[in-house]
Image 1 (cartoon, rainbow, N blue to C red):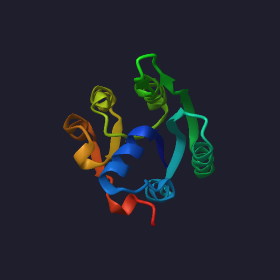
Image 2 (cartoon, rainbow, N blue to C red; image 1 turned 90 degrees about the horizontal axis):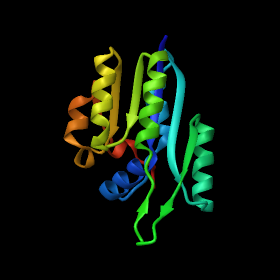
Image 3 (cartoon, helix red, strand yellow; image 1 turned 45 degrees about the horizontal axis):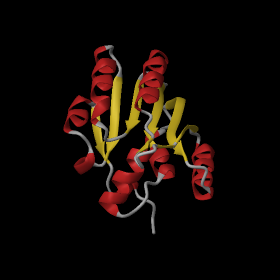
Length: 159
């Protein structure tokens, strides 16, 4: 039985899907496509920014219901009006740690900062599949993946 771990950069997936398709990513459909009978999910993390918003809380509960552990980081608003909220380091640390216990890692993100991590994991004999919106996913991340899966209309929630 293949052991897998799933890591979702929620903000990246939300904005790239919204901007490309004017729709929403269907996490239930994704889970059904990825988690096959010959797979055992060792870990599934969804990394999100906590804005303490009711709709967001409902979405997080849906993710938990699917099987994700939702990790939250506070949304930071700076004095100059800019904002910050990303999980790159947290995702990297978790992927490196869990890589010891799995056969395949699945990353949902288009962020090119992850290409070094993906290359490192592959050099250690791991398979790393990346899911992203092609036109908004860094070429370096696409090239570094064991397999790149394009997020397209089939991954969207039905309107």
